[in-house]
Amino acid sequence: MTTRTWAPLTDEETVLLPTGRDMDHYRRRGWYLSERLFTDNEVDELAAAADAYYAGHRDRELPVRPARLAAWRPADGDVQRNNDYIHYTSDLFLRLLSKPVVGAVAAALARTDTIRIFQATLLFKPAMPDEPTNIVSWHFDKYYWSTCSSDNMLTAFIPLHDCDERFGTLTMIDGSHRWAHRHGAVRPRTEPSDLAREGLLELDAAANGVVPERVPVHIPKGHMTFHHCLLYHGSGPNRAAEPRRSISLHLQDGANAYRPFTLSPGRQEPYKHDWLVRRTAEGSPDYADPDFCPRIWPLAPGQA
Ligand SMILES: O=C(O)CCC(=O)C(=O)O
Ligand SMILES: [Fe+2]
Image (cartoon, rainbow, N blue to C red):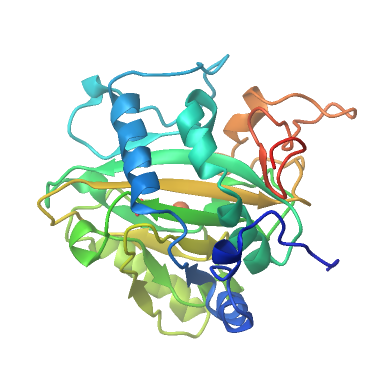
């Protein structure tokens, strides 16, 4: 690791960085609950940007529609909403999600110098306790990123309000990023009773000789969690009176690049970027394309 400078963080922001203990915790457990990285005002701005997004506002549209794009529309009705590439289609999301301290925290946890956005997805779980699509089955994010060379990527989960268990908050399987045996992300469409997904987690845990420890994380407004790309996680129904609103900000370390990946039938697939990003000199998808994968740490030239 080279020497890192935290400029241009303010003194108030520098104290929000993970401590050495926090970094060890992330290394051992695979996740971290941050300090308050966004002010109430900034979270409210994110929520307003979400409202505008759902009302149809876009600053730009994707030039093509990749396969498996998450793109909830009002016609899809009262199911869980997932919308990808909000950092591309909305200037406000891009500006807020590029807040330097967010990238700096990710860089510290991943012990890397450079952080780029990989994907930003807007999420919404309607306030319907029995809605099956609200359940996010146990999975680890890297499973969906087979064309990424890095095993050091991570995700910031950013609720747009105080988010506790009633809302179906993110639940981490402590230490599972270090499990050697993993059958992958099996996402059964389960009933809310959720037996299938629990069984799959138990099977994987047993294969690794551990009893899974589920940690539902109460994330206060303005805070966020960061989880390692190999960590199992998921979330349950929304039993609160309000929708659960959040953003998954998937992040890549500077070393990440496209790697060719041979499909095993019906399972791993190309990533959405492969339809969108510019090509490298070798002709591969460029996961450092500043339009789709902007660098957020250190700041891009001219941004300071
Ligand atoms: O919406 C959820 O609860 C899960 C989000 C998730 O899987 C992620 O942020 O990687
Ligand atoms: Fe995930």
